[in-house]
Image (cartoon, rainbow, N blue to C red; front, side, top):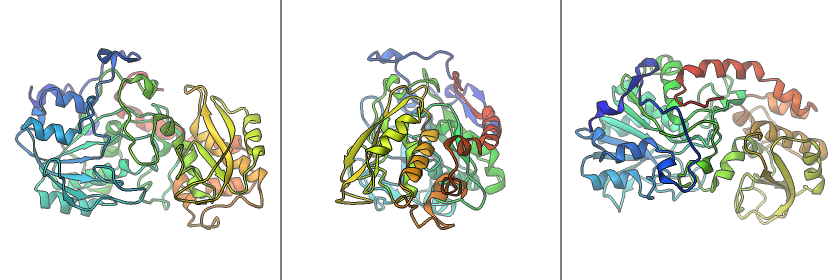
Length: 426
């Protein structure tokens, strides 16, 4: 099967896409009903769509096939792909590094290919690495978790900028968004760009990486890089719907980073990650990061307050834990564990806001922002502006805070619609 077979239609800005089917089913244990990822579609044809070119692969341990083999290993074994280099993002290609760390540029012992350290690389860095490796086609295959502040989408963004300037073909192998297809939360405002939010999307973007690539290519790249990626291809999934749960995909879950060990973690992460902007522990250094939230000052009252708030689709259990890394190491933290009872009703962004509001109200003298609540505090990078900190400190309610971004959310949702690829969108 040649490359043309995978290009069934042309999307926005000339992005070639493969048409997705109209129906998806809960996969259960039936492989015939499991979601077929973009990677598996190319692998099933022996990767021939990438033959005849020097290929650069941006991936990490999540770039796997249903049998658990990595796409790079599969490409090499096929004999049909000339891999010019592999580019490892945060945590590294094989996943040996913690948050904020990367693996060094080295030779992969399994395949013999050169693995470049691409963590934090911007456009110029990718251009240098792509030129050094003599890359002709860039392939991106990483499992995202649906949050603006998860760095892999910005790795893709920087690589796309480089590809646009260098005239390289860019191929995205699509995977499910474990949070689904609903957009939620505040917009990133100009002046608050950072490594965890480089362009203007909302906190829960509600898109797959393939859809984001199409959005980036038309909405941002012409202004930022002077041109779009002329040859952008998205190899879509089959049998996936944006309103389905990851557990129903039939796909194995590989932790995309050390502190997102399960799909349950991904489900809450987009909301509870805001606690990284406080002195409270977001559960790093426990077996349930981002599901366990607490602080040395926490008591059972916090769980009672949150359960009384009646947040949809979630219950809160009083919990105590001692982190072994990150914040409050070796100290007993009192707080809560989130238990999502109805994934369809659960709103992670609203839940995260409610947790901040109740913590501030219950512990006004102890609750604190990381960095002391200054204008350059980390919470502003996570939220995308100073608004959340100012409103929480000012005593605003959860409803008032969530209402404050509805206009910008509606505008973002309108803009993203032409780039969506799957039915069942919400």
